Image 1 (cartoon, rainbow, N blue to C red):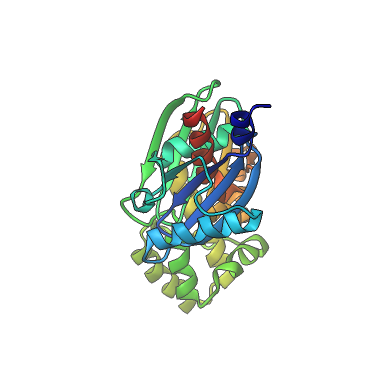
Image 2 (cartoon, rainbow, N blue to C red; image 1 turned 90 degrees about the horizontal axis):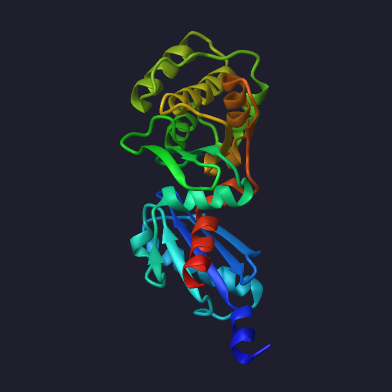
Length: 266
């Protein structure tokens, strides 16, 4: 092995997905193996949070800052990542990250903190179509955060309540403001909290399913999916077929960014 080959073999590739709610970072070695995953709330300083994620990832593997051969940033705050060598859209990076684990024709549902995406990939990984909802909180993690706040619950309490509910209390509005008003009326009428939470989950799924038709295998990703398996169960129930979840579903965008950093370098 030449000195140049040895240096190439030791290179790292970094992907940073700066979402409105959380920043995710994935670090790969030259063979494409994941060495580190880091996630933190994005907060109000996207640049500082991206630096924190990178520094923690490098410290976790014993590497020094600045060592990655290339870094691609994606997501809402991708232009705030000053150490990135380039940036790509989250649509592209989620597609690359999902196709890495499921290399076939797939429909991707990504439910994030502030937006939803439906992405259709061809059998060779090329993007055939996509839809994105980012103009309101309907069907997003922000919707569930508001419901939890209204019910006096922690976010981690939502999924077990929804999965253990004996009934579903229907919420007729996707709008966060109107749904909160509806919840007050249901509580006044004595509706069970668990049923209201399950109704909120069904509302999220219904909003996503209205965005586009879902052909072939369906893959669900995003922070909402990672923390609420009940959402995936309801998706499967509504579609009448199993919805799959890739490993570490909150990191698919960051993984796609890191893989793109590697492919752009070679």
